[in-house]
Image (cartoon, rainbow, N blue to C red; front, side, top):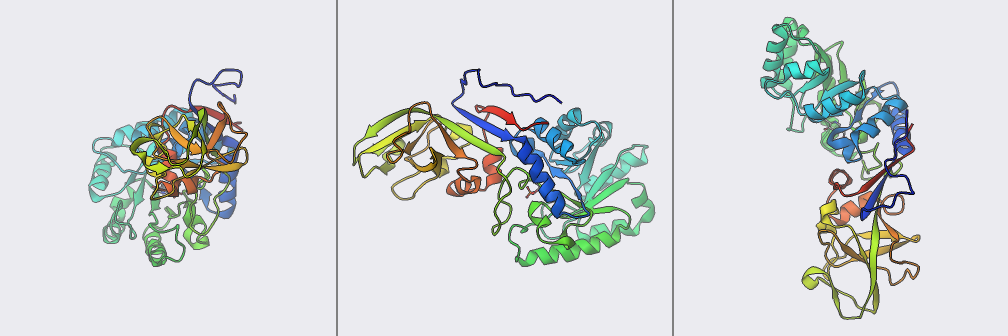
Length: 376
Ligand SMILES: *Cc1c(COP(=O)(O)O)cnc(C)c1O
């Protein structure tokens, strides 16, 4: 397959910031989780444009690594994925939207049926001669999507009805897998074991990335990692796998700011020494959350350049933000500064913004110059 880097290095970069996405690291992360998942099949959650990294290159790399089943949130994401992978199994997590049963089947997408209303629609579609398979989502304690356990039991007791549905998977989702000793994990596991016994012969699935690491019991027949593949933190007590995304911004200019002056909108932060302040061409329009700003009241996020960290100074604007490079004399106009990546952990930046790596990745804006490396 061709390695398509749309921006070879000779081309001047007109964007103010760039993303380097390491598809070889993505593939290695998949293999690492696949090894941890033992006999269970390792699928991949690629919703939200593969957590922001770009669904087409991501699924090509994952498929080459050996991944055969994929989870998206929406039917349109499924259609986009199907145009890249003709033979993959594709599940649509947000359920069966009204009147879309035949659309799913036409694209060989499997809806994850998450309510009795969806179940009735799917049963009617199959009864009218429709083909195609589906998954059944059973709620085990999250109270978001899925039939209740009692509804699942009622369905399971009607063997004739059940056999007509074409179910290929029964699944549930963990609410607290990132916190291994949370009591809800054990309760959800016990309920899922009961669910599995209601549907003999149908593959069962419970674990997201964090769930894989909770032990063999949680892995059932198929695991559905997402964030771990993309290098995000998935458990509060474990380091992430390899970073996949490096986000960098260019230094637009460096200016001297005297002690006692403030930087940026709202005069939110005062510098307490004669400072060299670098202005970066990235802001909240690029998905760098404004909540990661630095103020006199609370320190903000940090960046990484020339092997050292440089903290944000003042409020993040739409297209710009400032960092303190007083202690990094090599810093100069035109340098690329790492916003997150191997030098600056995604989770730390996310935490400074009061959010999680998932949200930071999926909110990366459209202005980055995207480079894919390590493709196959
Ligand atoms: C997003 C999602 C996953 C993947 O979760 P991660 O925490 O990113 O590993 C798995 N299952 C379902 C139902 C999901 O919505």
